[in-house]
Image (cartoon, rainbow, N blue to C red; front, side, top):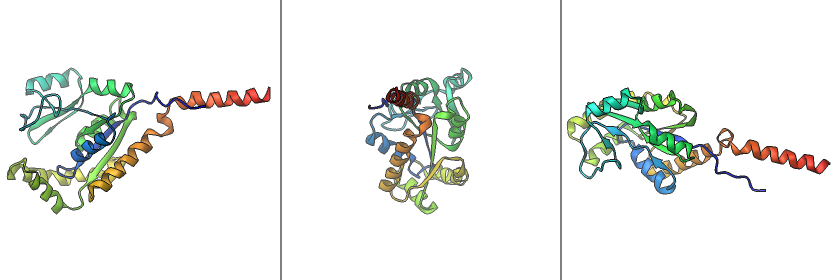
Amino acid sequence: MTPLHDSRRGLAVILSSPSGAGKSTMARRLMAWDPTLSFSVSATTRPPRAGEEEGVHYYFRSREQFGKMVLDGEMLEHAEVFGNHYGSPRAPVEAALTAGRDVIFDIDWQGGQQIRNSALGRDVVSIFILPPSIAELERRLRERGQDSAEVIAGRMAKSEDEISHWAEYDYVLVNDDPDACEARLRTILTAERLRRDRQPWLSGFTRSLNDEFRGRTT
């Protein structure tokens, strides 16, 4: 008899790291590996960068619109980062998890803490990604070519505080080799999906096995 595996509730997979350590890259790699994974698109008050699309990269909102979403309880988490507000809209995440789809969050430690303390806490798998060195972290930020020298300096200053929260996460990986880091992330996700407490079909299946035993003795 083959058990049914389609009743699993989705996972809220939190990826955090200091800017430049690779969480966004790892999120994209995971979704390329498993197209059933969805990405939690954040809302932000910062203006779009070149090539960014509404609803794909972010939901771009005014400060007034963002504030109303927070007051109305529409955010799972929110924070101010480098002078702009970011947050994760609640409704699409809850719908995905209920439907059994895993959702990836590319957020900082503050956002991860808020989600772990929310009603979705039981669904969370949290992973912190460390750079191989601080010098390499700065090199990656400069190589991206997205930010001014002033913004990069601000990100580097914030990195020490972000890294200090590594012990709050379920898993911690060092991204010294992107391919190896991705492989470890795949292993974590596969194992978490197979946890006993994430398999609601198991109770019914084991009852059916017991019924088979009883049938053999009558």
